[in-house]
Length: 323
Length: 272
Image (cartoon, rainbow over the protein chains, first blue to last red):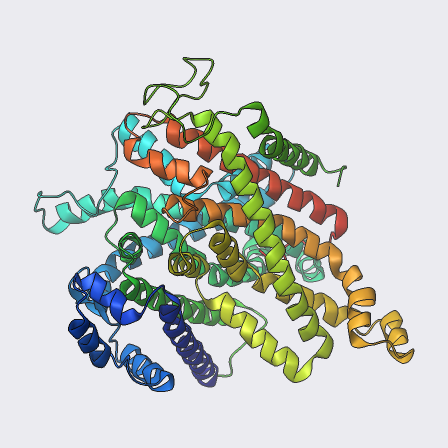
């Protein structure tokens, strides 16, 4: 188990380094000389300032050395400076990270729990009305763009019914503390989390349904039935456990999409996470910040992939770790 | 394909969308950028502007018609580019095996690990928004599943007897891959491609929604994005283009399912 984890972590680190190198070249793809761009962002463009910037960021050095400086910077969590926001990129991201984690993890949990639940129902009642209804809904949610779901949610629950707040993380100026604050945040969280979760819920529903129907046909289920196990036990211990494997794999594959969805959701709901930060960086063409967020997003995906890999190993009844 | 009801529904939707994209602008020559009426005209009040106007008095219906062009074109072309990149990489990895396979698959996995929408945003922002940069970045983030699928297919086809026979008769590798192997690996690729067009349309609309669309072309995502700030006064500006996206993507997904059932009943989950 330990060597497996070590191996996966090492692989993750290599991929992360490759992403950082890619990032370095992406910055250089951006239009214009980086120093001039930075000077422009800082609101000054006289040649002396540009020269100073060039020296400060090592832009007068040869390319390989620049690359080395850049990688060293990122590894020590120095992601550069955002001239637009007048703050280090790492600090800006650090402030916004908790909100994004809260949003994505809530959405992920909702989508996984509901998706597996609905998928199991659909598979259990395959062919009858309930199954068809669930399948059709899953198909429709699967085809909706996230930003549109978000706006329809606002239209329905905020504008028309006035149930939920349409933007933000907490009620501005309310100065709530303790439980009241938690409830306030939760109220603000419901819509963004549901919006982000719906698409994935649809995917997991479809996947769970298909996979359960497939597992049900396999021989070992017949064996379990022949042994005289009750239907409930077969469903839970044999069918579901095996059917969940592809769902876990899918959850890992989807972590990148989840982050991408967070960018959109946070933008629509003005949720103060790194997705919203990315959007702001985009509007202001703040490339340092944009690419900094990109690196952090990639790192988050890598960590998430590592976790799903481990979960897969734990869930898979065919793999046992020697203890 | 024609036997599955969902496939038929999907096909009808797609044909409808294509005819709107091709013939629509000829029948409704109203430019989607021109002001035709007062701003915020509600839908179903004037026959000339059936779906109302937006914040600048532009015809929402015209925008939907012209937007179909952009969505379908970007969806199809970026999928095509992704296939042009992914198929050769997958074919070479599967055919040559060994170190070539290792190297190409690590490369593919690398691109699969990077969060795709974030990469697409970064690429379009850096290359400056235009129809070309949008197509390019969607292709860059969507080729890896193609390569993996083709690799798997080629890997299993390579050992077949007719391929061995071609090797024995001294055919070149390129000839064998192009004439013997790829045609037989085509059906799962077609299924995947139809689903990729759907994903590409979603990606394009999301990019346009964030303001990264081609500034000279109207698109559904742009319309929803522009209507976002005035959603309290004018729901129709955001609702209708969104429905258009939903229906097109749904149609393509249904086609994918229908094709999947028709072409390879075994392969129901690949590429998802």
